[in-house]
Amino acid sequence: MGTPWPALGRATVPWQPVEGLLEVSRRSRRSIPTSFEAATVPLIANAPLQLSGDLAADLDEATRLLAAFDAGGAGEIAPFASVLLRSESAASSQIENLTSSSRALAEAEIGEGNRANAGVILANVRTMQAALDLAGRLDEEAVLAMHRALMSQQVLHAPGRWRDQQVWVGGSALHPGDADYVPPVAPDVPPLMADLVTFMDRDDLPPLALAALAHAQFETIHPFTDGNGRTGRALLHSVLLHTGAIHRVTVPISAGLLAIRDDYFSALTAYRTGEAEPILRCVAEAARNGTRIGERLVGTLRSVHVGWAGVVTARAGSAPWAILDLLVRQPVVTARVVIRELGVSAPTAQAALARLVDDGVLLESTGHRRNRVYRAPAVLRALDEYAAALGRRVG
Image (tube, rainbow, N blue to C red; front, top):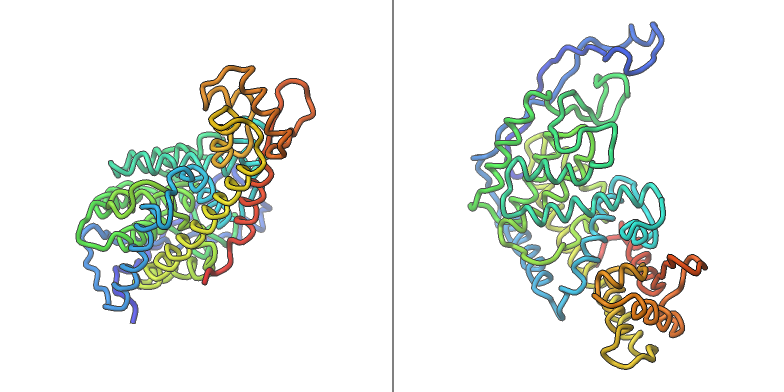
């Protein structure tokens, strides 16, 4: 028996094709339905939630693992916070079939390279960072700011604005009549989001349950014309921070969801029929998977750093050693990046990078005499292996 939760209703809405939006034949236009069924989404700000003892224990165990990972687990993970943020952003994008190599993503982050997917995923990194920064004040403007960070480079969508048109998932591009899911009409979005903001401030629900239900409700409202999935998964992290369940790092929950992607999408569908348990179970499993995935990634990067210590020939405490710490979180660098991050002079930065090339830590990517780009193959390999392993259940 699923955990009871308010189910969606349906409303019949007239459909008027947008003139000039799509060129279709007169016969095709005549076949377009004149109405469609849109979801009517219930308010949840004060909705009661009944959890079975088994489900409550499942959520509690997953939350405990999140908190332990956030606190450091077997070792201090704060130095890896930025790489965890980038990896979680990439995993969230991968759920929607947006992928990029770790090298392309790291190059995009320092303004090098021009691969489209890397730029899109980098925008999701900005969204995740905005979600962390804004967790202290989870209001409508905070959600809009997350979306603005994601979509700032998009020309076909309105960054940071609630949608003013009908959207739908699946089916025909011409009309929503045979869509897999038709979210509520645009005028319903602002009041539904205001209700969701009130819900996210509740303190009578387990943190992971609050985050999972807030995420599912957000995806059900579908408040934007694009970017709902990535913004909604960033919002999940915001809620966990807002509740105090985690404090410091981005736990790879999207990476955990990627391993159960079909279950995740099915759980969102079940949520809309009034079953809350599937999405609660999914997010709990994703949290458990995510902590294990994160621990493995951090452990691999630690091993890379230890391995470097055996090959670097510079004296202890010199600039090359400081660059090693930088490379773990930013595996593609230039002299300008080193100067900015470490506060050293240009000659010092260039000499240190050259030493690390000689020691086999770095490879120079361009072959140019000026504006050289350096990459740490061991870190990039670890990140690519991490990405390749996503989508597998973690035992």
